[in-house]
Length: 544
Image 1 (tube, rainbow, N blue to C red):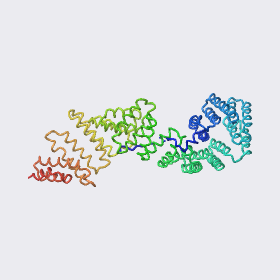
Image 2 (cartoon, rainbow, N blue to C red):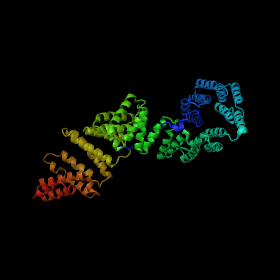
Image 3 (cartoon, rainbow, N blue to C red):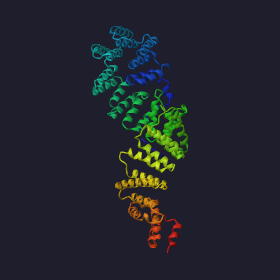
Image 4 (cartoon, rainbow, N blue to C red):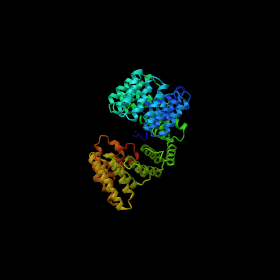
């Protein structure tokens, strides 16, 4: 797997649902659950479908327009609703709301009476009139609100609309316990009242998601095909940190014809974050078959593919397509940090470091405190053998790390050492980088004083700075200490490459000094790390 990074889900219409789900019903439920944007989308989407009550849809679209402060639009919707069905009472209530907003109570009451003449002794209608007064001015119209609630109780005290409204009033007053009690009563009186379950769940989904999960499961036991219920349960699982359960619920929800495009993104995110990479790749690929320009689907297809070994040879064209989409419309096709990092990594692997650098420099401009961008940028300069630039880039990584660790310091020491070697023809510049190397080696040694690596850097620098005559002996003191620490470590074989380098150097150093016995001692230690090297063994045996 290339990368797993950090923390946005829904899709295809199912034939079993499409015969009845795509009407006004879900839009009405979303409105009553206080999800106005979603309600509006569904009401408009399904307006002309068979079975849709257009008068009802226009009523709710009018109410939404009022909350958007679009009174002219609201008036059009209410009048269109009356045109669709003059006997549908509620659009007259809508016109009455507009009159109340104009301060014309008398005209509003005329509209309310007209509504009552269309639907007599209706508790739901009475509650809608109560809401009209409440939304206009709950204090000035307190008596009218009370009267309408009493009427509703007189007509049917078990009507769920009474308790939904009372719950909303208690929620507005910050009496959340009282609101929950009212919503629970609404669900008890009408087990099919989807908004009651959702409103109850929404009171708890952040603070006590288990309560929300329990209530929403109760809803789906009674109405398993409710898109609203499926979506809210998935979100409740998400808020509870139960990502696999959330993904499982979204997998049902995305098959509901009344899902939302943005929820496809959440589902794709959950599949990736939950480690279900193959399913995430397949889901995103299916989305792209329907819309090849779906940028979010492109992103998640690539992200998941990057974690699947068998798809590694397909990553580059996906990365190129993403970059092209991003450049074509950067305002809408925005990259998240993981996109920058994964794409830059792929470009770097493809030996295209300069393209990776341009992408990461854009990322740093957008988010200069993200340390991973600097780390990845450093690796692109390593790919180009520009170690001086790698040091500068990695300095950004360290500067934005809350508490750099041993490996961070060793990495920068390594970059700086090779930057010094890179500048061997400019002694002053080389010395600058060797000083940086030594500084970070010392910081690493403070964290793990028993590790050999910082001491080895001392020897490495000494070798580079020594004259030709001094070179065979310059690193002996530091390498002696480094090898003692390495040999005392729990698993010396883990560091075989460094061990062999130092043993070989030490053996040759003692040969220069004509101390053959000491040289053979180090050469034989070398062979302990590389016992199958016959050429080296013959060399050691040849020593007299």
